[in-house]
Length: 146
Image (cartoon, rainbow, N blue to C red):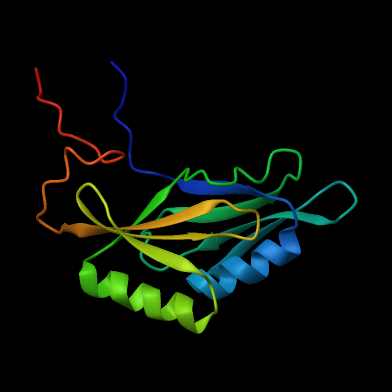
């Protein structure tokens, strides 16, 4: 019998330019640097952070220009508590001059913005907006459990 999963250990994102992405991610998410990963020549090609609100899950960046830039794709959705948190994030992003948009998503509110490589960052509220958007194109619909 296999053991169950025990959460998410961390999220690692490929980036084109580590210095540019470090500056951007550190100011947007107010990260605490935990580790640097130098290559054989001593050049730092990756970093790992602690991020407030992610519990014991980390966030890492790895310089990989060959695979970075999943432009328009959202490999991870970060949770935020409620609509008030969504509003606070919008204010924070506006203050930083980062373009973003608010979407009434399938369940809750969603703030969408892009990192320096075009990767979509999603902040999804755990609080539901209470609207049934099942018939709206691009929104999810519940699946009955068998």
